[in-house]
Image (cartoon, rainbow, N blue to C red):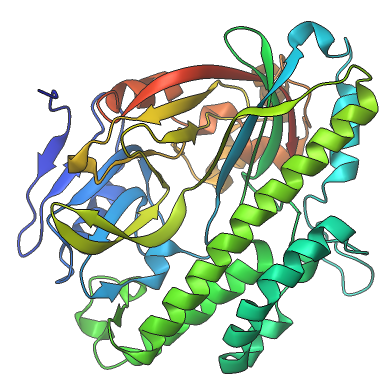
Length: 408
């Protein structure tokens, strides 16, 4: 018999909310946002809330939203298919160079990252000349993309082919990590980049347009939805599925680039993907739960079916975890997607200094400047508390500590 570690929150005129947040702070604004979502008429059974929960746009990050006959584009968000990939190598800690700066520079050179806002010149976060590996993947993705852009030509102008195999900004990262046995892992976090953002924003606007007469009755305009059977519902399912595939391939391309960059720095031959995981944490898909076919939107949550592998990263100064799902049906077989923020990016930049960032990441070869203060470890929840709160959702297979971190 599984222990019950969730808190049950009843919602007037809505479905209940089950929160796996024992010992973890939940901001009042996030709680109110969850209650808004729980009042939507098509929610199936209950909302499941992960311990990394925090305020998001429209719907709360760290929530699992099961629906019947409807889909909320803003719940999936604009970084469609955002997620993690990790792979264990045959390298050991002793095989890494004493000074890791050269390895970080090699990875930074191999994977476009960040963004430059300029009308002239190339955005440093995109390819100037798309490499053959990325173009090969794009050629397989392109026919479905053309079918989408035939209906929605404005999506052609998005940054698509030139973003395939690139990292992005914000909390997206590439890391070199060591596990509990001092084995070397590569791990990275990214999604569907510019094209996913364009798809997400377009369909959020379409949902709000379709519901223009009903927006006043919604708890939040970002809860505008498509009903099953409508043209926009089917088009969104097609587009979101494509963006999720783009995101998965994007991570695989970057992982290959990280491996190639490392081989330029470390002469010792090594193998990769002895244990490998590639999982979304911002996405929607059809699943079967409690005997029924439903849509499950995970907004900052990872699938954790029984035996399924997942990745739960901490902040850039804390440990991360490779986990195996326990198949807890009450959580719709889900777990958290990370530690979860305790403060906004703006508040973090106003609260902490570069000196604080240097101290917090003393053990990591990474950028230590004003532009990454919003990612300082202290802006995140305690990852140990987060893991304890979801002990009935996943079991830990490996604990990773990062030694190199590349951020946009």
